[in-house]
Amino acid sequence: MVLATRNPGKLREFRRLLESLDPVTGWLLADLTSFHVPDVEENGETFAENARIKALHAASHTGLVCLGEDSGLEVDALGGEPGVRSHRYSPSGDDDDNNELLLHRLRGFRRQLRTARYRCAIAVARPGTVFVEGSGTVEGWITEDYRGKNGFGYDPLFFSCQLGKTLGEASDDEKDSVSHRRKALEMILPGLRAYLSKSHTDPREEGYPC
Image (cartoon, rainbow, N blue to C red; front, side, top):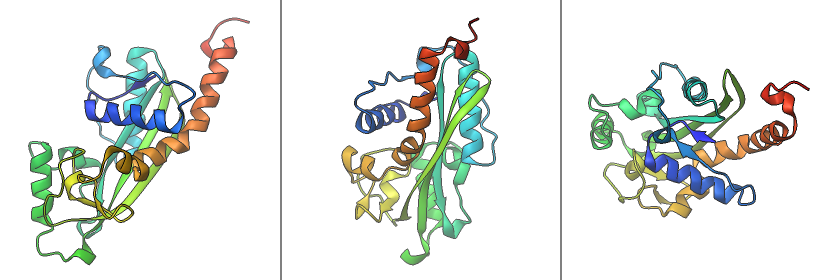
């Protein structure tokens, strides 16, 4: 299966989550660096739309089952920003610049008004068709300064209510235990297993004559 990303941190996280959630199947997960797949414009208005765009685009170019994922941060005081623009919130799109812009826009907001969530949407596609989708969220709030150096993106600013620390302070195991991506994967795994099981046993699924 191909994860429609070139982000090595995201690939490591998905491999870790799949191994934790389903150690028996033995998932083999590659990313787009192993294929010649052109970039695609992520012009959806929701995380779910962007996940479908990524999955279908990657599947059409690789001919393989592809998992598209889109996720980001929603801050209530900012009307849901940065939302689907989480990865390109600042002009540069750099993590540090994105974080600085977020802190600037939340300056003066007390803690009770800094509530936020990470949201993840996943779509899995074969060429031409999305066949399973899922989503997950994790609730928290945005700190006023950086805490921890783990993770990526907004993790050093996102305080998890469940963990009692930022995701930047959390270990991989701690982060995975509350992860919005974990919740989305848990939702899609039954459908993904069913599809792969059928495609491996029913020749009609691959278009072969019977």
